[in-house]
Structure formats: structure tokens, C-alpha cells
Length: 478
View 1 (tube, rainbow, N blue to C red):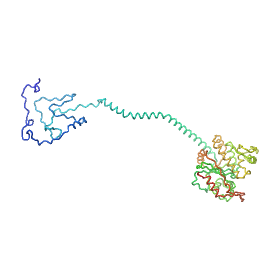
View 2 (cartoon, rainbow, N blue to C red; view 1 turned 45 degrees about the vertical axis):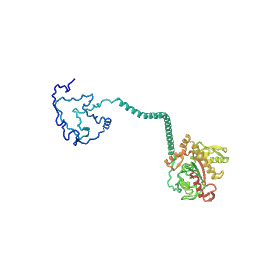
View 3 (cartoon, rainbow, N blue to C red; view 1 turned 90 degrees about the vertical axis):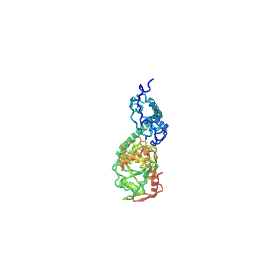
View 4 (cartoon, rainbow, N blue to C red; view 1 turned 60 degrees about the vertical axis):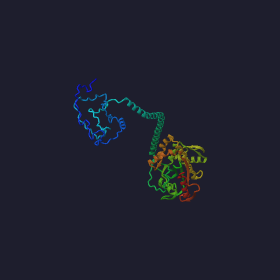
């Protein structure tokens, strides 16, 4: 059994008690006496401290209770070695003002020379515990799994819808490409035809009719002259106002009788067809505006040769012809039309009436008949009938028609429209295919009377009443 004096065999252990280490009885240090130089006691909540230490072990070291046994050190480190010396330890002077270093017996805290050694911290490159990674991965997997599941659903939906979308997209692209191709071909064809038209710009026009509030109607005066050659102006044999009404989707053809007794600006009162002979298309348009209060935007002029070319370009027309009309067609062919076209006088004669297919020369002769029926009134009606049939043929858009128009008709047509206006008008033509066709005659029935004047037999007309008819029929919005 080891010696109780740490291996020493002698009993001469020096007494180290002194005034600082031994209790000396006195008035103030007597047992039970109250110390006045110490601070008041403060209740310490050790349970709260232990909980704080458990919740934050890395911030404050654990507090050991004060006992006579030395503290337990970690097994990883060697406990401190206490020196075996007879010399007393240096005196300690504790700070009693610090509340964490006194106990209930007012004794100074235990001070160990080695101090407290915290457990060694793990190196920075040490691997983390696998359990933490597993829990973190599990949490991430739990959080990401619903999102990935939703993405998978969306991808599946896209996969299911993508073939249909691709088909629809291809159809739309095909339609768009086809539309651009057709539009390009149509535009190129229109521009080529427009360049061949004989352009004669209007110089000094005096618009006597106001077009404000009537922008839904575009008026173009189609003038058929009786000129036999390209350089001959002649007179206006037919005057048909073609109106495109975008509100009612109608094409209104209004014929103005050539014998209307009107006031020609700066030329006095005369027949309407004489205005063209006096001042050309510009004066004729101003005369119609001045007397009938209808604004005319542009004109298109064709002569006998152009009219024949138009009918032949569309392949002729089918029309009902009476025996009397067939006889007059043969007379006109023999007397002037075959001669104008350079053919034999007896060429293309008709054997009789019925449902006939007329070529260009025969249609021109049919349009000039005056001695059958009610003279000039039925004559203008025949002219409108022929024009309606030509428009119906143009609506078929056969390539052969445009080819014939470009080569035989367009070069003989004269207009005052600019190239841009003609191109914009050509863009409206496809939309006008479905328009209804309506015919109108001025003067209307019951609004005129026959009268002899210095200009010959003319039609005295009621201007105010005919203006109302034009406004109601041409410029209607419903």
C-alpha cells in the first residue's frame, strides 16, 4: 500500500499554514459572523445554465462543480502534470466582484494550475459525418422530388401535344408561305399591267362636288368614245360611272344619257356628250359633278378598238339577242365596225336572234344599237348589260384572260390614275369579286322630258330629283 504522503518516508512535512491560509478567530472572521466586505448573494439558475450550455456547446465551456477531486480530462490528451515541490503555490487573489466565481459558502473558486482544456476541434479537411449528409440529401430529395415530378408531368404533356403543335405550325407556315407567294405573283402581274397603261394626268380639275363623309365609295368614270383611231378624241359615246361601295358591298353602274341637257362649265348649255369633245375627260367629269353633285375620282377611257379587244380577251359574251337586234348588228358591222378593224364588210354576220355567243366586233355593234326599242334609253341598258358580262368574266381570274388583257387591251386604255393609285385599286379587286352588281340610269324614269333646242333634241331633266336618286342608290350605307 503506498504511503499516504505520496511516496515520502519521513514525517517532517513543513507546515505551510499562514495568515492567508488559516482561519484566525476574530470579531469579523468568527464562525457565523456576517461578512460585510462581500457582495450580496445572487441566485443562480443552474438548470438554465445547463440548458444554455447544452444548446450552445461551442460558445461556452461546461461548468464543473467545485469539489476536492480534480476535473476529468479528455482521453485524447494527457492530463496536466502537477509538480512535486515543497514550495507553496503562489498566492491567488480572486476577484470577488465577478459573479461567476463564488459559491454559497463565500469561498474563492477552485483554481487549477492547468486550467480547462476544451476537447480538440476536428481539422478543416476532416470528412463530415455520413449521417448529416444523408439527412441533408434526404431533405433535398424530399424538397426537389415534387418539383421534378411536376416537371416530368409537363414534359409528358409537351410530348403528347408537340406532334399536334408541330402539325399546326407547319400548316400555318405553309398557308403563310402560300399567301406570300400568291400575293407576290399577283402584285408583280398588277405592276406589269399598270406599266402598260397609257397615263394622262389631269391638269386643271375643278371639283364641284364634295366627297366628305363619302369615303366608303370609290367612283371611276368609264368613258367609251366613238374615236375610230388612237389619235382621234371623238365624243363620249357611253358614260358609265362605276361605283365601289364598301359599306353595302355593291358595284353600282350608273349610265348617263348622252342627250342630257346640262350646263358645261365655261361652255354654256349643251348635250352631255359634247363636254368630252370640248375638253376631254377632265371637262366631262367636272360637268357631271357640277350638274349631278356626285364626285368622280378618276376615269378610264376606251375607244372602239379597245372595246373589241376587251370582249375578245375575256373570250366573248353570251347574251340574248332579238331578231331586230341581230339585224341591226349586221348593219353596223357592214357600215363601220368591220372597216375599222380592217376586215371584210360581210365578216361575222349573224343569221338570226336567240341565245348567242358574241365576239368583240359583234358586242360592239350590239352596244351601238339605237333604232330598236326606246332609242338611247335601251342603248345605255345594252351597254350596262355588256359591261356586267365582262366583269363576270374577269371574276374568273383565268390566266388566259390576263395574258390577253396585257397584250391586246391594256396598251389601248387611257387613265389619269397614278401607278400607286392603280396598284391600290388592284388590291381591292379580289375583295370586290363577291360584290353584288346594281344598275342605274340617269335621268331616271319620270324625271325628264324631251325638248328641242339649238343643240338638237335633248332631255330636259329634273336635276334635284336625280341628285336625290344618286345619293340614295350610290352612296347608301345600308
